Image 1 (cartoon, rainbow, N blue to C red):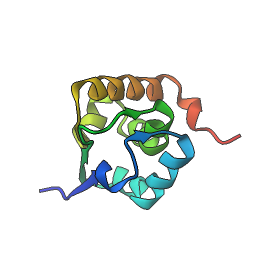
Image 2 (spheres, rainbow, N blue to C red; image 1 turned 90 degrees about the vertical axis):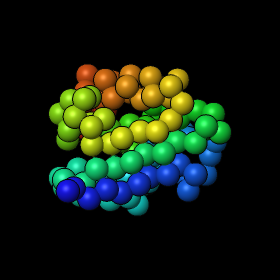
Image 3 (cartoon, rainbow, N blue to C red; image 1 turned 45 degrees about the horizontal axis):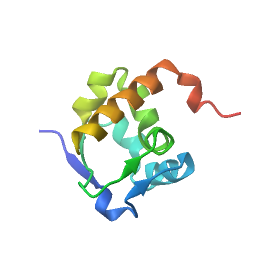
Image 4 (spheres, rainbow, N blue to C red; image 1 turned 30 degrees about the vertical axis):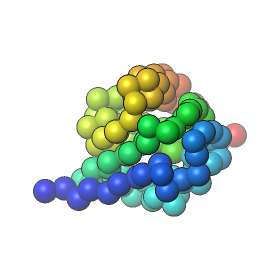
Length: 108
């Protein structure tokens, strides 16, 4: 059985999660580049007290993982989110955006 790790937003200062640099910093902290190439699954817990998760934060944290997964469905199979439905809908839109705009992650 594949390993599982947990990213719990209660461990991240909130209830508003914004900023690509902040997402990228957390991506490094959680070593998600290594997770992307492993069989591990990730449980992502977003508490009901969360007010907002911006696309820039989400894409900084998870954008490269969406691209590594190759599709929205594959990403959400590996990264299993527990969050309010309105946030889950937003995350699906953000994942689509990552796949449609791969240049978001190019370094200038």
